[in-house]
Amino acid sequence: MLLTVDVGNSQTVLATFDGDRRVDCWRVTTAPRATADELRMVWRGLLRDTEVTGVAACSTVPALLPALRQLLDSFDVPVVLIGPGVKTGVPLHVDNPREVGADRVVTALAAHELFGRGPEGRSRPVVVVDFGTSTNVDAVGPDGQFLGGALAPGVEVSLEALATRAAQLRSVELTVPSQAIGKNTVAALQSGLVLGFAGLVDGLVDRIAAEIVGQFGAAPVVVATGGLAPLVIDSCRSIAEREPDLTVHGLRLAFERQQAAGRKPASP
Image (tube, rainbow, N blue to C red; front, side):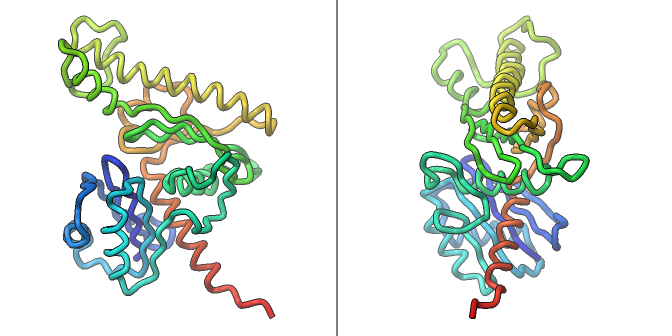
């Protein structure tokens, strides 16, 4: 069973795959100061008796990388840690490829492989909206190339900032409001955060899609992913597809590509 691990700023997603079929998936809070032993205890508790035959991981938390590397080095199975220098097959059409987070790269890989085929089998561009600690709106070309995108604060980050900086505002339950005009502070915050972010996403998608059409002559399919996606996507008019855990699918695909490259016979 392949274990995939996406270490994000707020949550870590672990998933197991049997071939291309996702078997189990878990979300746990990311602890940036966790030791390798603490990570091992959490993983072992989730996996129980699952036989792991390979591991693919990525992390957007630099402070956790040493512990993550130490844990991965203890596995007696093939391991792929996505980062600079690891080939994923995703061309990075940006100014500085080393700046692109590993999670965005493998998410682009999965978006192209899972959604980059039109009804007639023709390749098409994809826009990925990832609702997490940050809200990422990324563009993927018809050949699977990462074109760049837009980064905005996440819904929870914005709520925390308001509660911290505004004396008369407080943290509220994040839920979809019944109407845009809030009749009290809680409803007004929910409207501004949930519906406001839906409007932000729709606006960015419209602009990015127009640039993609101008460059490739084809409209992109828009896919939502990320832990906070269920909160916002039903209020967005631009999103056509959803896959909650696109990044772990990308880790699976990156692992498979690394294994296939390692099995290629040497050139004579």
